[in-house]
Image (tube, rainbow, N blue to C red):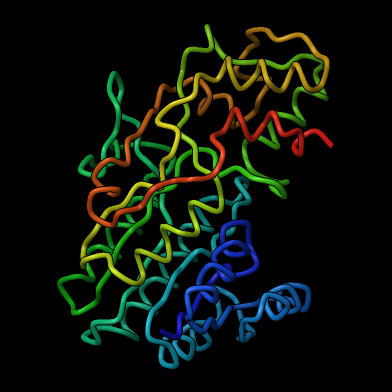
Length: 293
């Protein structure tokens, strides 16, 4: 299969490209800069220059491929609404380009929070959540199943961890701890975060583009829920800092996320596709020390 990957030089994309190639697929990666193009080519993929605003490039990538995995998203949280709108335009262009073709389209979204219980693949996102716009874009992709597209959504947990993660939530928590002199958590720290290793995530995206039925919702979850105070304790131990409850405001936008209990299950995904996470869990991965070098 020839797979067109947007975000091919990003955090998940950088793990996905070699995962696809090692399974015998060809990869065409979208690159918006010279450095991204070089990174994609170095992993053995073909490069298509363009970005999410270049709808002609997206259409060309779709036309020359047997399947599409859409990972690109601008994670500048100061321009989140603009990023959601750009993503919606890109999804609309991709959907129109492959409508009726039966080609697979897989995109990334986020696991929902279900107060008081573990979220499953059958759960709808809570209305009015901060990520409501991204949830709407994910639904637009699922709706393409009625238009002859083998569409699926891979919901990612709050933490996709691994060596080389410099911009995810764990990296932000570590930087905040260094800045404040304390490794903090919100409230009593019992709120739980689901997590998954980036290599296990890449494997699930490959299984999805190969096998997922049209309209599938999948959860890339290995750790169902790690208490945030346990995360803070590991960070504190490695940085030789005290661990304590701190005001949510100390974390900026991340404080609101830390305060919400949001465990998630991947039982249905494992049953459907036979996906089995094999990489270290979040606490074990943190104890390897690469986040603190």
